[in-house]
Length: 120
Image 1 (cartoon, rainbow, N blue to C red):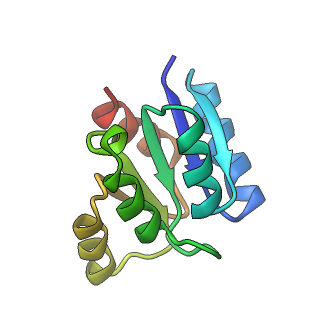
Image 2: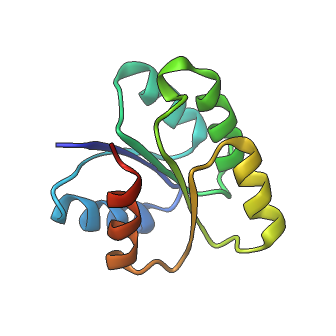
């Protein structure tokens, strides 16, 4: 069963995302921000990272750049799930190494469809 690291500072958003992913058969590990995510990524491997952009301590772009520095995360899909929808932010996401960009509020079916496309 694929393991997904979800990163969001909003407890309600983490709960909604986890509910959607677990219901689809994924195992989920939650992180409350980018720093927490880095710590969890050092403890175990993941098949996909799903991260918010706007978070305290370390935002989604910073997290993506940091993960991409690590050999284990060079090819792991990293999806941004955020309220940010500007082309400038999307370009910054691509430059940081994000695999894809989804805008909140999210459609659970669409989220699962995108994950199925990019997960190994």
